[in-house]
Length: 256
Image (cartoon, rainbow, N blue to C red; front, side):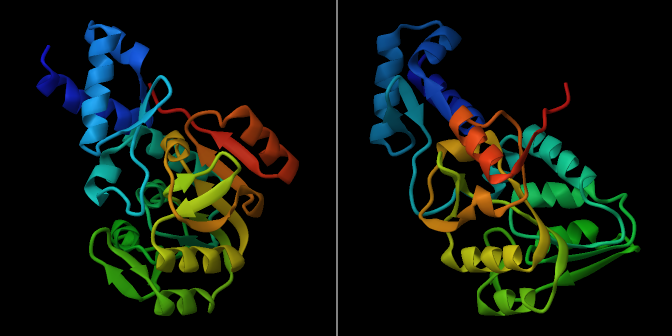
């Protein structure tokens, strides 16, 4: 198998799992360790991966990957998290869903809930719930981020301040090993912080891939949210800290 065939598949595996290992790729492709090391070196030189001990990870940076690619990544894991999250949201309540493909999955999972008020700065969430007659959908306004339908900036942040939500559901772009919740867009971060401040109960959706990525802007800490929904066990040290903080962690497995 030539490297022109291996390279795209290596990137697909990295996007799916957040990282790749030399040993795992060598076994997967049936080639030598040295061949995989050369492949990873080539991909790192092209800026597609970052080398780490024993393998490579998706590159860190100051900008997020494209929305359509994010929407496809780990779709089954996101759907499982969304179902678990929706199961914790009661009917007859006010909910905020922010920007992100995971929160869009939650919107889809809420389709059978009754008598909800859903406030959102995500045009895609509003579209998902637009035809649900017993759901009152309120869009914050703000500057439209054309790449993903998000509404950010001062208008969005000020609109959030007019409400008190029963439940707030947010996503993130990255999650540090010490529990810091991170994102790329400072304007989006400001809205997320306002959402957390105006909610009685707060929930974060972060799949396992978020732990292998970095982003420059801090939203909050896992200590500041009530519940975290993910698709794989957190690293033991972080799971222990969540227990100390009183942050509930729910691991949702994709359906077989």
